[in-house]
Image (cartoon, rainbow, N blue to C red; front, side, top):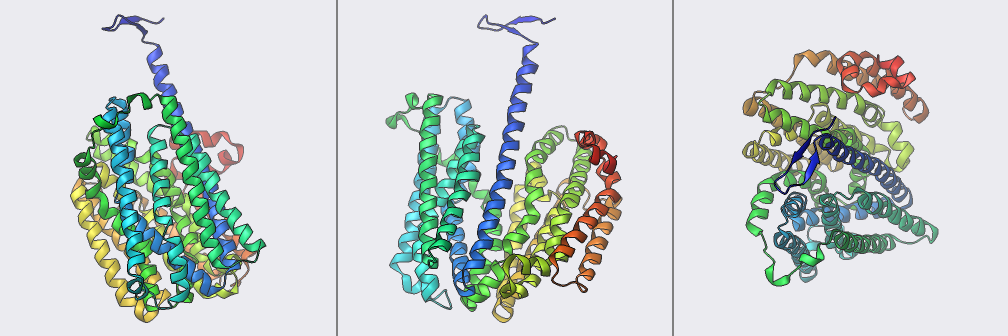
Amino acid sequence: MSVETTTPKSKKVKTSEVPHGKRDTTRKQIRGSSLLLAGKLLAMGINFACQVLIVRYLSTTDYGAWAYCLSVVAFCQNLAVFGLDRGITRFIPIYHEKEEFNKLFGTLVLVFGSILLSSAVIIAAFNIAPEQVARLIKDKDQPLTLLFIMIFLIPTDALDGLLTGLFASFANPRAIFFRKHLLGPLLRLGVILLLMMFNAKVTFLAYGYLAASGVGVAMYIFLLFRLMHREGLFQYFNLQKIVIPAKEVFAFTIPLLSSDLVSILTNSANTLILGYFHNPSEVALYRVVLPAADFNKLVMTSFSLLFTPLAARLFAKNDFKGINDLYWRTAVWIGVLTFPIFALTFSMAKPVTIALYGERYASSYVFLQLMSFGYYFSAALGFNGLTLKVLGKLRYIVTINILAVVVNIGLNFLLIPKYGALGAAIGTSCTMVAHNIFKQAGLRFASGISIFDWHYLPFYLIIAGTALVLFVSTLFFAENIYIAVSLVALASLFVLTTCKRRLNVEETFPELLKIPLMKKLLS
């Protein structure tokens, strides 16, 4: 029986309806997150197919030039964004909820204006001093031609990311799914198919990607105007009353730029240094396997959606024992679910590399092994960085990010001039390992969470031993992808069944036990 209460405005509200409303909100959030996760998986699949097609079609030199230019664009785009994408997702919902519409529109003006201005400065700098840019590239002609086309991707891709954050702020996952995870990848796939159909050159690919990005941004802007009209926001727009909260936004975004710096250097700077000391073919050998290695982050990225709010609630209760338990149980799940990807990209790297990219890139399997190890090392240790952020240890995060940058730059300049792509792969892997060791130590010194829970040692030994057995088995069938995939499937099943007690499925994901096969495997 419901009980009626009276609000100050004399509106009668049934208390029994409140939990139902909360359930509806939670259900909407979970359904939206699930839609975005499905979209992300779809987009990753299409983008990976695009990368394989490009590698197969272009010559090694052309692909190296293409990959180098993409790295330059990514590097400059991160500089242009200046962390303001985080400002969108934090401040827009706050101002919208508080009905501070003058600040809401002021934030939009600040963020988009800053992005366009910084992008224009970067593009102008490239065009004003092309000779200086040429000094950064060993083989100048092909990369420079592409670069002066693709440099215009900086503002379009940056705006695309900001608009995605804006739609997320208004809780509109369908628009994000359609534009970012479906339309964008399909447009790029269409460009690649046209490239192959017309037997065109790599410059066609550059113009096509630029056109696809422009179409995507235009579609986002159209959807944004529809969204703002539906929300009734335009009635609050008054140009003379706009308040630009520059101090609030930059005070939030600037301290976290160190995290972006580590990401930029890990993903882009290695390629830029490699392009300075070596030719595009060497860049191609390194960059070709990077997307495959990056798949080791897939499960970890997905789990982060749920980990952060759970850890934050435990922190609010000062339940550090609970955080420790959540941390290591989550790490075990990530380690087990990521193991099939790690086994393919590390233990079976050679047959996988040849099957995907052909004999031209057979030597790149070593680079795939090195980078996959670094990515999996990060994943299997769990959310050390996110946990530090939840605990509010921003100063410590900045410190260890700076240390990681020093390690990365030092290793790159030490190894790349002499060893080329191999040096870049070693530098990337060692940076990720060192960065996670720093973060892991931070958990102990900054929060009291155990640096390693010895209760889970058998789990990690099983993972390491199984990966080693698979690695040794490649000596007998070095290039047979079918046997490699079959053995990885069997090994993954072995790891899953052996570690099921550590996973505690009955408590964590009881829904899985409703599936007959899963119940037989995991119960």
